[in-house]
Each structure stands twice: as structure tokens, then as C-alpha cells.
Image 1 (tube, rainbow, N blue to C red):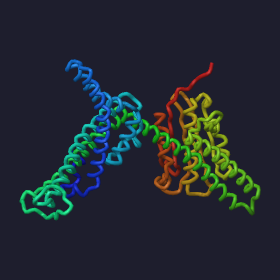
Image 2 (image 1 turned 180 degrees about the horizontal axis):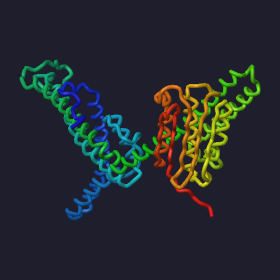
Image 3 (image 1 turned 45 degrees about the vertical axis):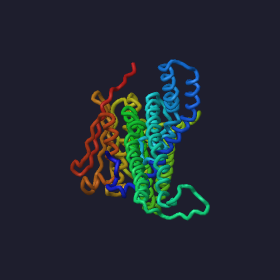
Image 4 (image 1 turned 180 degrees about the vertical axis):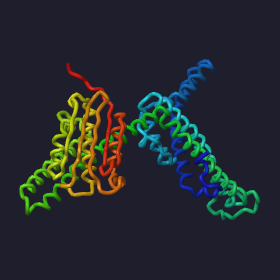
Length: 427
């Protein structure tokens, strides 16, 4: 059994701190057993005085002895207390950390079972510990008793007796102590093995925990994509606009002023997007708290104008009633276009005034088609870079059950996305 003996050999077991921590955990159970015995003894004595039939008396005694520990184990806080003791003294690590109170009846029943196991194992080890240390003290003192008398006298001179049994008594006491700690270590290891299965979550609860973790991870990935697409796009625009403004500051002050204004607009938009994402991270549920609305394909014009302010030529072709798109599809499509423009700015490998981007947005009976093309200088691997842009687009498209094509077509990089969507009609 894993964890029963971490290292081979009695000496290794005796020098490990875990052995004595397990013994302490079992002694806690023994102390609880003693408390129950003190309470039960009075009740059992009272039942004996009632002079009831023997069978009924036995049943009542069994109820008095067994029911209180089981009822105490059903208390929600017992699971939390036992979890802390098991983690600190038995070295068990639960999937749910920290182990909280029992919230369901299956958890309460399993906690009561564990509590009774703790009492039974602790009571057994407590009895053995009392016997070993009680008799051990007598056996260790055997060689130092006076040969002539067994009573303690003021003027008695104590010497080591010569009887051979007195030499073996200390060895027997030490052997009993060794056996006690070996037994405690083995019992503690068995409890440590059983603890995750009894106190820990059930298979159904494990599935629930995994589902919560998966949902949290998916939400984090979504927020990471939001930050990457919105803030990353804004920073890319600010960078190229600043470079264009610096290049023509002396020769074309009007263009430089427009570029600076576009930088301000891009930065404000990025701050709004950042505030929106941070609001989602805070998960603020206070009355009146709101997050900024997310952009949709209806905001593409603003996005394109901000891109053009950096000197980039962007040609847009639209077809279809884009306002009829479902809100979720429209939001994701906007982010896909935004990331496509960001990739064009970052990886085109040429000045802004030499960069022309063609954007096509088409909605028909087959779905929504998005296509962006831009000239590139270099290979497709240069364009794809080491970032998360294209991967983020693929993730968004996969959620909507669409398809993505990306690659070089002659001397231009082409990104084509198809999103199947049922167009709503007004009539």
C-alpha cells in the first residue's frame, strides 16, 4: 500500500517525524474515546439500576455507546476539523483545499464514518500506549531495585541485581515501545490511505470540481483573448501612429496632429476595453455596477478609421444585413477583424504608408465570411510570429463551429474565416 512504509527498515520508521505525528493523531482519538467513556459510564450505571431485561439493557447500552459518536460525526464542522488534523498530522493532501464543512448528507455520512474510524483506531492505540508505558516504566526500573526488599526505604542502597531476568526487562520495555510506534505508524498510514476516499470528495463531487476548474480556465482564456485582441491592437496602432507622426512631424504637421489625435482615440478605446475586462475579473455584483458594452461588427467603421489614421490604407467591402447577426457572433467577428488588422500591422514588414489592407465582410445564406489580405515581406512563418493572435482566432472560430484559412497567396497574406450562422429576418 502506498505510503505505509516510505523507507525500508525499522530504524527509518522510528526516526521519521511522520511516525510520531501519526501517533499524536491517534492519541487525539483516544482522548475523545476517554471523554465518551466518562459520559457513558454514568448512563450505563443508570441503565443497570433500572433492572430492565438483559436484552433490552444490552440494546440500550449499545445505543448509548454508539449513537453519540455517530451523531457528533454528522455535524458539518467535524469534516473541517478532521480535515485540518489529517492534513497536519497524517500528511494527507485533499483535492479540495482547505477541506470545508460537510454541505451534503453524503458528506456528513462519510464524515461520521471517518470519525468512528478515528475513535476506534485511537482507542486501540491509546490502550496499548497506556499499557506499554505503564508496564515499561516498571520493567525499566527492575534492575535498580534492592535485592533484599521491594519497598522503598530511606536508608536502602540500590544496586543492580544479578538475576538474569532483570537484564531482559529493560529490553522488553524498549521492544514494547518500538512495537507501539511501529503499530502507530502502520495504523496512521492506513488512515492516511483511507482519508481521501472517505473524507475527500466522491466521484460525482470530483467531476463537479473538475467542471468548475474547466469553467474557470475557459473564462480566463476568454479574458486573455479579450486583452490580447483589444489592448494589443490599440498598442500596435499607437506604435505605428507614433512612428508615422515622428517621421512627418517637420514636413507635414497636420498629418502628425491627426496621428496624435488617433493615438489618443486608440488609447481611450484600449482603456475602455481594459476596464471592461477588469470588471469581468472582479465579477462585481454590486447594485448599479456595469461593465462597458462589447464592440460588434457595427463598430468596424471606428476600428478601420483608427487604423487609417496611422497612414495605412484599408479598403472595406461589405455585403449583407450585418445588423441581423446574433450578438455573440457579431462580437466574435469584430474581435477576429481586430486581430486580423493587428497582425497586418505587426507582421507586414513594411512602412505604414506602403501597407494596404483589404477587408471583406459578407453575409449570405451560407453564413458570415470574413477575409483580410495584406502584403507581406518574408515567409509565412515570419508573419505568424510567436504570439497568440492566430491561435486566438482559431479558438474563437472553433467555439462558433466555423473554419479558418490562413497563409500566403502569392505576395499577400490571406486570412479567411467562415462562421455558420442563421440570419434572423424582420418582417
